[in-house]
Image (tube, rainbow, N blue to C red; front, side, top):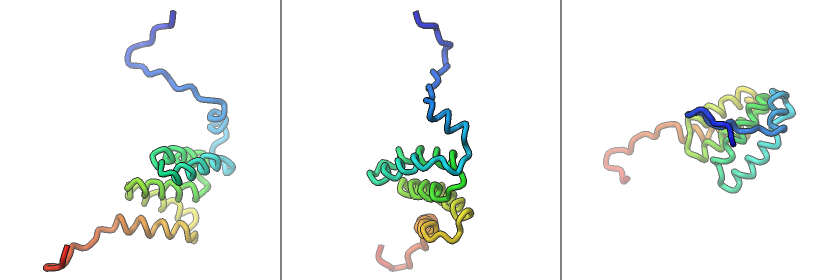
Length: 125
């Protein structure tokens, strides 16, 4: 007979040995690349909502890699979450300000965040 659970308590998700090892080793400049590759694959298939948690985990494991933050910003951009994307690309630029990929993503995000001026009087809509 199974042991009764207290009402209102969720069953804890069992974590595998790889996740426990990652958590013990973090932060490390050697972790997160496998998750970023998986996220890039998912993003290439249009599964941005599945790629986002993988990228967040990669950033959490390895906060030293600005490419993870840029990928996360791009993933959020593709989900039309422009303010969040702007925060992440700003963090990537803080780490690597001269990276042309970071600058390109920043320009694309800024174009969506910046409010457009209203059309002129009499101009066609």
